Image 1 (tube, rainbow, N blue to C red):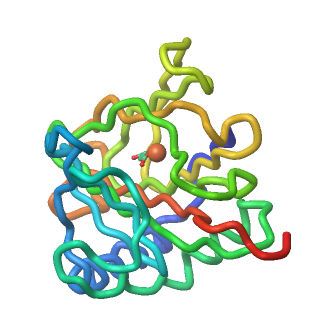
Image 2: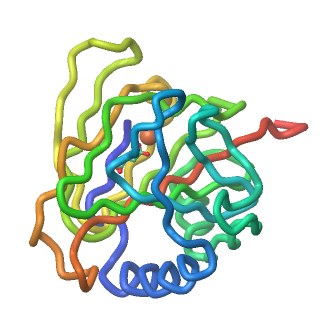
Amino acid sequence: MRHFPGFLDQTTQEKLVEDLRDLVEKAPLFTPVMPRIGKPFSVRMTNLGALGWVSDKAGYRYQAAHPVTGKPWPAFPESLLVIWDMVSHYPHPPEACLVNYYTGSAKMGLHQDRDEEDFAAPVVSISLGDTAVFRVGGIARGGKTQSFKLASGDVVVLDGASRLAFHGIDRVIAGTSTLLKSGGRINLTLRRVTKPAVS
Ligand code: SIN
Ligand code: FE2
């Protein structure tokens, strides 16, 4: 994987948070639940773009409408498309931006991002707010993993051999950033969902 510490400067981070505040009013954060068992996630989520990733008792999938409001997801702010163009090395635009909001002891178990059709497209992850302990392993479940910190403004790209790497968030370290007024961490992941007709 590729890690760009401090990729976004303070002004860009502040502007992005301001944009997100408006967008989250239109597409409110919701608490997804695990497929089948219905156990709630500890993060809250929403999405931007043509397609959004959701999880409920029926399973994981991308869909065009917000599960609570039934409305289309809001469009990406331009700044996200600029970041994608800078780091993705992929000639088509992203279609989905998953917004994960971590507060308190929220975390995310090890998983692969594999609900997309085109693994030639990377997953581009942007961290805002408190520092997280990110864990990454190989492409087999149960393999060796290592952890490192993701701070506000960091960008991570999962592509090539790392595109299907298991990854997750062990914990978020409270009080490590003042970007978000009430603390916590926002992670944005940009994804291409459908395979483009022509590559
Ligand atoms: C995710 O894998 O969906 C989120 C990872 C992160 O919060 O950095
Ligand atoms: Fe993920």
